[in-house]
Length: 113
Ligand SMILES: [Zn+2]
Image (tube, rainbow, N blue to C red):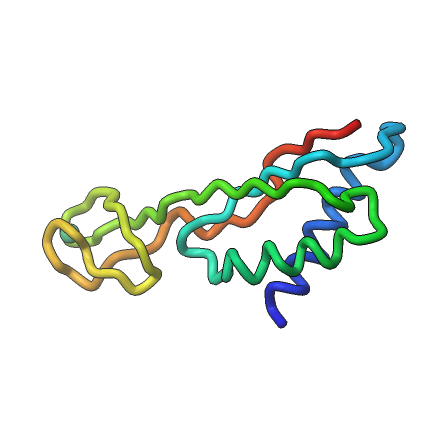
C-alpha cells in the first residue's frame, strides 16, 4: 500500500530528526500535505499509528496541514488555484494549467520530550 510506505518514510524522517537529541518521546508530529499529493489522508493517519508503535513516536498526535494546490495558467499567464492535477483554469476554463504547488508531503514540525 502506497500510504504504508509513506508512513514508514515519515517515521524515518522523524527518527533522523530526533537522533542524538536525547529526547525520549515525540508528542506531536506536524505534517504538511499538498492538496495535489496523491495521498489518502485517512489511510495515511491509520498507517502512521501502526508504524509509530514501538518507536520514539508511539502515541504521538498527528496534525496535518493541507497546502492548497496552485497552478500556472498558460492562457491567463498567471497563477491560479487548482484542486486537482488535471484541473481546468478557474478563470478562463483552459485545460493548459501546469501544477506549480501543492504536491508536497513533508514533516513540518515535531514536539518532543
Ligand atoms: Zn486561465
